[in-house]
Image (tube, rainbow, N blue to C red):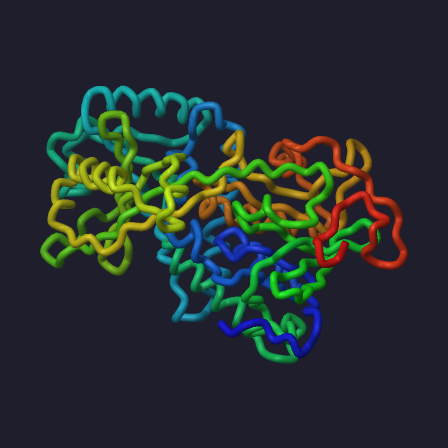
Length: 436
């Protein structure tokens, strides 16, 4: 993409989406489908956590103890995935997302892993989810390269997968599918939608958010501004006074390996395993590769002076070791890529999603929506996040999702004073430094 064209002065859009990860892309696409013009603000879309994600759409397997509040949202989003994917690909034969509805197979390596998976199954069944025990012989008939030493197998028909890199490319292609003169075309933006710059802060006028100012100083003016830039959301200038976005980086190492012809297919569906109490997964791709992952670390490696997204040597060793326990042929694959990215976690591991309340009973901040902190569930929750955000733009509020309000960790926010002359110091909210 080229740099932002400044000859038009400020850019004008119905919606400004700050952040081009899978969540921001999904929101931008749904907003476009609703008839709005959308400016997507990101210097390198889909290069963060989305780039490393495995793409498992797993509301059943991702049910964790003490995180049951997330289940309803995960199931809602899982149900939205078929239509969401169909709308993204449309009639274009050149867009593919790698979406598969093949059931996931969960397996355990030893007796302790069998007990742990059985205990988790009890929780899943108690929540109305479908998890079926599979005889080991049948499991190995489905996946012939599984180790004969596995201790148990469970079929999870509700857990599917998508390729996040192909999905991101497909959404970007769909967003670019318009022409100058269309109502969705934004003069000055690359392709009529892309703003290849970083948002420095929010713009305010008369107590409402009216867009964003970029690092370059250019303004993007919008009726609705969606903060969907992951960990960077907490660092934006101009957030409402008193608002806290307690986001923390949680790194995950992930491997991509090529399967030689004589071992194709290594697995036909996602295999999620437990090896000596440690989770590991193997996800097949349409191009003959597999993704191996499941590490989760909050360590000092990223602050050690090395790369911005350091890969843990111990993490790579652990992933290869445990994947080979479940599928010994993993040892014969070609290691193509080892990647790590930080996912935005919150104190309760649930997303920050929705509008921002001023004070109890005093309404929300106009023009501002937050969609961050999706942690492990960003790809899965993309359709639901997009639907919820566009619903809020339309004035629809679903009380089921109030538990994920982005201000739930904040002290009561200040009420802006009236202003009639645009952004000024006569407001209770801090403004970006260039506009204070």
